[in-house]
Every structure is written in structure tokens, then in C-alpha cells.
Amino acid sequence: MSENIRHAASGTDGSFIYEKDGKQVGEMHYNVADEHKIIIDHTEVDEAEEGHGIGKKLLGELVSFVRSKQIKVVPQCTFAHATLKRSKDWQDVLFTEPG
Image (tube, rainbow, N blue to C red; front, side):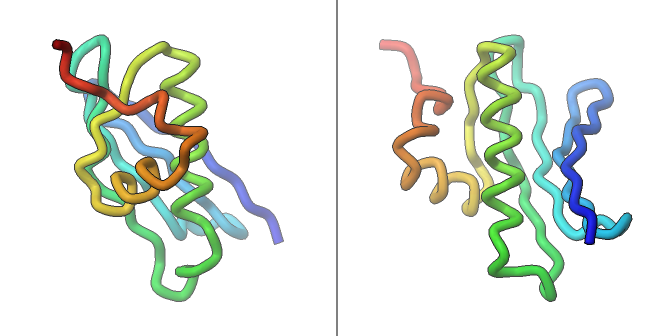
């Protein structure tokens, strides 16, 4: 069994895509809001693959990506929002309003 996470981006849209045995089974989509932040708007995992941590793996890749770019995240997706709030190690990437 081979597993892979790849990043695809075009313009202001991007996704982290989880592939298993050459088939896409999960995706976390984001939009670039500005040069300082992105918005996670959707996470989807095939029903047969739910409960295997794929969403969290996708979020981990996204967190590494935004840290390397020194940008922040606005999690509009309920999964990403809940997971980022629960994971103290990832809260540094959350966007907070200035002031």
C-alpha cells in the first residue's frame, strides 16, 4: 500500500491531496486571502477512509506549509477549526485579528 500527500496550487486556490494506492481519498482545500493568510474552506475524506487520521495528516501538511511561508490560517472548515483549536502545537498558525 502506498500513501502520498501532494500539494496542488493554481492562482488563489490550493489543495493538499491524500492519495492511497494511486487514488485520491482525501483533500483539504484553501483559498489565499492575502499575502499573510489563507482560508481553509473544505476538508473531505472518502467515507471508507474515515477514522484513519487522513484529515489530520492533511492538516499537518498544511501547517508545515504555512509555517514555511510565514503565513496564518483562517479555518472556516469545521474539521480544520476544531482540530486546530484542540492541537496546542498548531495554534501558532491561527490568524488573529490585530488589536
